[in-house]
Image 1 (tube, rainbow, N blue to C red):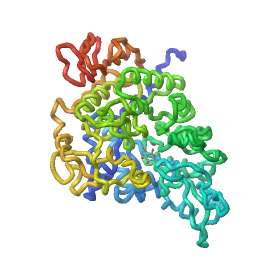
Image 2: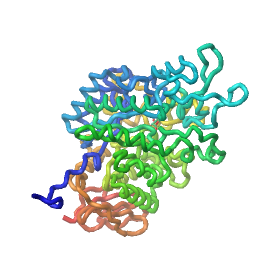
Image 3: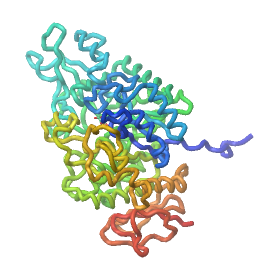
Image 4: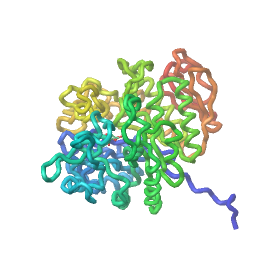
Length: 549
Ligand code: BGC
């Protein structure tokens, strides 16, 4: 009989080092010519994604929704928004993706629903104290007439987090909680009916073949409703961390229940959490063995393009994840964040008050492109999983000059037109150099594209060896060949203060020069570089992968 030591170990789970491509469905590909992307648009571009070499896609919410927040206001969790297609289209997409070896991760929105959800409509039609109201967070107001909100909590989109309703008899009534827009009432996760409903929704999509879920606002579900008002200093700091509603202990119990749901599936389905918590240690608490599989690590979003910051943030994330045996899930950009090409193209000196915007100052697109190319090789060489955001492979920058009247992000209105919101990273992507929307579709797109994006169209870059698209495809191929599926811990190499360099195992080395002076290309065979190597030297903001063989 074989002893444990002789038994072959199980292959590592696919998601531990997968490369997942985020599809912001509204802006990916428009097959039905209404100016908005859709399910059939995604289906038509699956061969492109297979050719790019990604292992999975994550699709932003595609459920029926009034689109008050780009689909993060869900009216029905078990169907597809008619503007995007049908459930049959979604099923076809999942099987076509699987046939190409691409897994499909969906986006679940458990912190809040749409105010058009039947359960919220029922809550509005029912009296205070009713079971219908107990699925959401309703409270009486303060003050003699109850006309002040129950707490001073702010909405993440600006304004208060409470809205007052009118009761059935026409009198001013209770208040409901919405940490985001008023059209997004928060669920009450202390109610077992809500817990059961979401287990059932998860099973619905897993049974249709979904391989996993990204969890929206994963750190917000459990609330301490006895928490009371926020102190002035927390409010002044944007109420991002120390509040009675972010990262509460009860959240972990919710995910233990979710893990039990996925564990019943063979193969087990995946969760990846969007949890904006304060430290990597707090993030890792969501990744204990009976909780979630993975969670986005936003350290590259929070860090400057700076060797000291990058080295220390990478170290901190690796150490915290190691403690719980989870891989780090790295990412540079998503649909909420200023595109990293633009973040890196700005002077890295003055941080924006909003961490999603990175740095203040004027964007130098040339510099941003150079750094984005190097950042890709840095990211892809790290141990762990990677999420890419659509369009970064084309070298798209943040669109910073969208006219006021096209802006759709609720942040624009709710901030009283002081914050332009996130539309600049959501502009439909260019596929070809011509047509009314550069191949996105045949109608006028929902957000206008910059004219010069014709030069960045996928078809234009496809055969150009110097293009960003070519770099992404090649880097993904090389990563698969040298790093994927292998347990190769990171070992730092000391090549001087401005150089971030590390080995993965004995053979593979990644070296990034963040200084202004060239440095020597390390010994070994060059397998890929993010820019030209000038006579054996590595120029500023350039990365190289070398191997010992
Ligand atoms: C999503 C955002 C959304 C918010 C509310 C997030 O973190 O990524 O796009 O506006 O949750 O659902």
